[in-house]
Image (cartoon, rainbow, N blue to C red; front, side, top):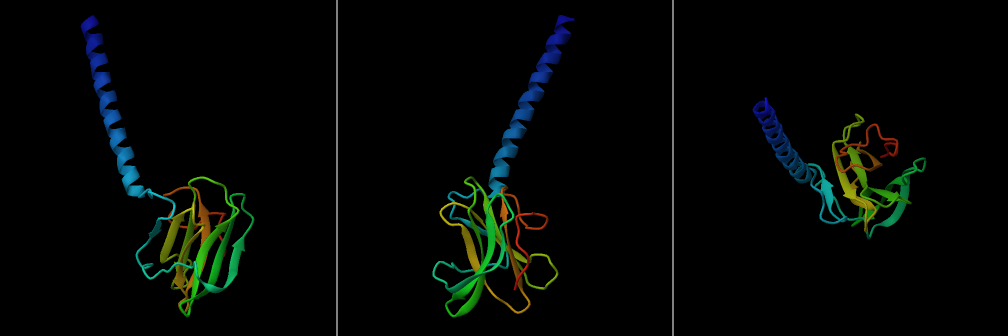
Length: 163
């Protein structure tokens, strides 16, 4: 009987070690897949957003959409002129500290689904890069608390779509 109990304890210990190994591998893989930025100024862009520019020196700036009804911060679609072109970008103001994100989406075919997005972890910068306005394109911004958030859809911390 004692030998049977020892065998069961040994098998349980082996299972626990195996689970710990799998859990460690999953955490490591999740960190790699999430692309956790080394610093808060790293921006992640989806395919199709490669022509973005920094709005730091934009002129004629204005706010085109804003959501101030969120306890996490105010989200805005901003716009202005960069190198002679008309651009839009996302910005969050009065936000809580922590590892949170601003997402900026562009819908190029007016179907209400983002065809491209920019995401930046809030830190030194509280805005995304800017996307040039295109005929028929719409833009919106949202505030996200998870690094895995890839869309503003369903979030209450988003602005309306604006051109």
